[in-house]
Length: 351
Ligand SMILES: [Zn+2]
Image (cartoon, rainbow, N blue to C red; front, side):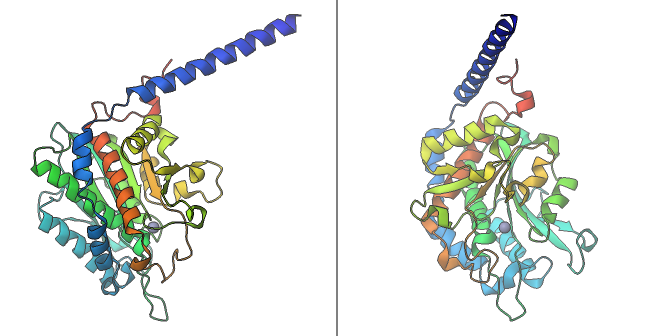
């Protein structure tokens, strides 16, 4: 009898606790209010499949010789990005015509030569010390021994041109009086393919304090469709969003439902997933510093890390839609009233 009572009490307690957790999560979800809906639509529409395609055919062209870290081709690719930001009048965070964060040869393994991350920046209008980072890697695998070039159109030409278009959209908004409240850093990272070393260097030598870095939205391969989604290509894998900040997870979902209705696939977010994609691109170096991240990813396809990853195989309307989602998510984080909260600090999740 006694045992029964204790068990009942425990069951009751358990029920109460889980109800309370559900309530907390509901309160958290309800606290996320989508900001500036009509402005977001106006500006995400400036991100177009046509421009993404034009830029990707240039960035993933033979001219850049597969963009292997420290090579002539990679330097040309960095210069291509720098020229774009200069032409668009999107400033460097250094306040000069220098858009490079130089990475010395000594930081990289042999035989790689010195390289650089490429950075552009839009200063926030109201809370400039808080920073949203949108990143993608600019490097790839270079030239094969037989002379064929790894163009890396999806990996990560797709993320690179997405950032260029997102930066252009934020800059247009700023010019028209709707600059982001928080600052935004457009971070093109080098040396990802040789061990995520561009992001490792940045997080060891941050241009803005990591404690003021609100989020890292990292894009690595968003222009293709994997075999799992051939029947319904309206999808995107979301990895990492809920690991440090449930607010980020629900915010990402709410932005998507408000504007796009892409099927956000969490298969690879499972902590037991054998692929462990969570640790396999640049966002991981930010997450290690307790910065909430989202890794946007289309999954692996037959041309992954092959010379057949070419720009003609990219689904440009899909790349447009996914880029618009990332832009809108960044807009929300940069402009909402509260700083995106870590779960540890989230008032809705506290007792
Ligand atoms: Zn990649």
